[in-house]
Image 1 (cartoon, rainbow, N blue to C red):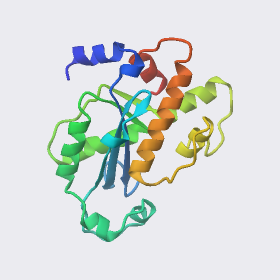
Image 2 (cartoon, helix red, strand yellow; image 1 turned 180 degrees about the vertical axis):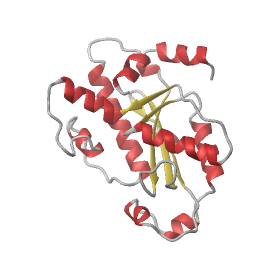
Image 3 (tube, one colour; image 1 turned 135 degrees about the vertical axis):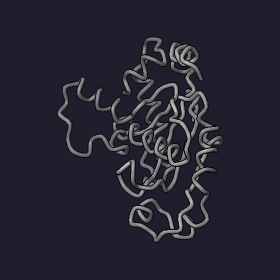
Length: 206
């Protein structure tokens, strides 16, 4: 998608944006060296989360089971039966065409995706925008002059402030859906009483 089309996309009312919630589970927090374990995504068409169009992929690995994999509810059999990275990324890129990427700590997920593409010899991907539910909540809390306490910006803690239910975390698809729900809660609160554009919402979540 070219610069002009991206600009047009950002001018639309935020409810008409092509939002895509993403969650990636990895072996660690080093985006350049730790391996991707699972990748999940779910489209958001406000006010609907299109769960029926979700994607969930386990990346094939033959190495021993890591502690991170156990935390993310994966077994050695799950990883051995997964798909090669190339197939995982092909499916994701097809789903993510012309999308606005949403994630809780979106810069981490975005960089993991770029590293995966680089490993496959592909060019960097530029979505139409990045929205971080964590940064949006940080901005809102600091704007109300609240002092941030440890743990206040976890996905679960952020959801609780909007009355969203508890969820089974550390599973990529569950986390992607939970993030999508938080995104909608944040967005409707931000846009309450006025018409907001995609660009205005992206500014809140950067």
